[in-house]
Image (tube, rainbow, N blue to C red; front, side, top):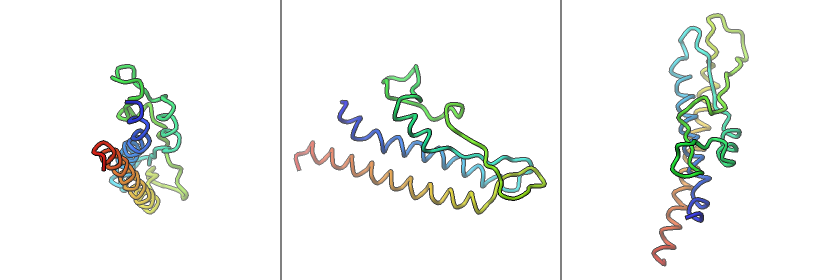
Length: 129
């Protein structure tokens, strides 16, 4: 089913990675007032490219192109550098996080719609519509 992998892989990968980034950004927003909390983010482009080249593949996967995104150590998660001086050690800038979360959500929905369109196209082709 290599053709099926090719048809769905890009958008399914994007959806999974966007969901992981949403978790990270939500944690930042939830810790806006937590002293010492360091804001983090996922370098989507880097991780997406790693996923496409198989760098994130896990040895225990059932297929050579399967990968996991649950292990944060395999992801390009970085700490944000605040644009202003912080006194309590918290680097979360609420406006920056809200903007990043909104942008990520829009891109997540776009990837989800594209994935859904691919699935509908495949189903239509299989049915002979």
